[in-house]
Length: 64
Image (cartoon, rainbow, N blue to C red; front, top):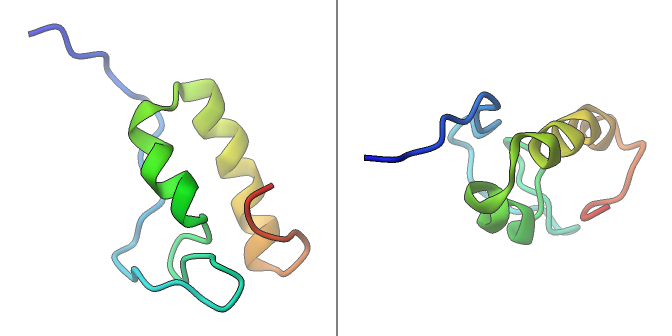
């Protein structure tokens, strides 16, 4: 088995419902970001993780 270890875990908290802006109410990712999560490398995941608190606070639109 050659599975790459991923150091950045999913921000999913099990509240999987999209708001009117298309962001998950639980993790604040867009549907395309959620779908792409397993294909992202850790650098991409970390960049997205840095945006999530800003989205949660309403400072950024989704899918940036």
